[in-house]
Image (cartoon, rainbow, N blue to C red):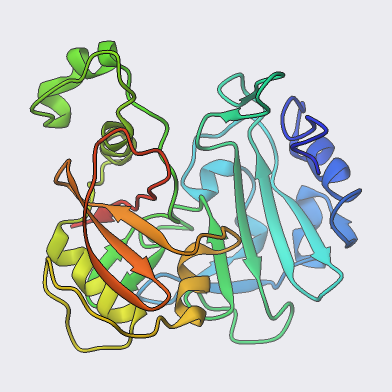
Length: 282
C-alpha cells in the first residue's frame, strides 16, 4: 500500500518513516532511540559465536553494519508480538520514482526483529532475524551455515552501469563490461566488494542448499528433487517473499535455484534482475 501511495521514501528520519508505517502495519508501541529496551530485549546473542549485544548500545544504522545515515534507530512492537529495531535511510541515495514507484538504492532500510518478542532465546538464526543488518557489535556474520559466514541478508542488487564497470573493472575482478545492458551480477559483485566481502562460490551455494534442504551435501551443479525446509528459508530471507528464488555465485553466468520441490544449477545472464545475492566472509 505504501508503494502504491508513493510513501516508501522521502522522510527526514526514522521516526517519520515509522509513523507512516504504523498506518499500515499493526504497531502497538513505538520507542525512541534512548528507550529501545522498552520495545526490545535488553540483550541479544548474535553471530556464530552468540556474541552478547547490549541493545542500549544500538544508536544508528552504523551499529547495523551500514553507514551512519544520520538518523536514529527506533524501536517498535507489532500486534502479533514481534519486536523490532528500525533504521531508515533519509539520504538521496534512496528515492522513489514517481512514475514507476520503484525504489532506487539497496540500503534504504535496516531492521532487526525478534519473532518471539520478549521471550528467549533472543539469538540470531533462531528467533532473532534481520534485513540489511550486516553486523551487530563486532560480529560479521548474519548467519553461519555449514562453516560459511553469510555476511548479510539476501538482497536483489542494483545494476552496475557500464561506466562504473570500466572504472572499477580490475578492482572488482570483472572480465567483461557490458555496454547498453543492465549488469545485475556486476551490481552484486560491487556491493559485496564495497563491504569487504565477496559472492559465494558454486560449491558454497551447494552447502547453503544442503542446509536448506536438510541433506548432507549437494554438488556444485547437482540437481536434487527434495522438499525445502520453509523454516530455514524464513530464517534466511526474513520478510522477503520469493518462491522460488536463486542466488548469484561469483561466476557471472552461474547461480543456484532454490525451489520448494528441489534445487539445481542455473545458467543466468548477468542482466537477470530478480536473482538474490548474499555476500560471504572468509
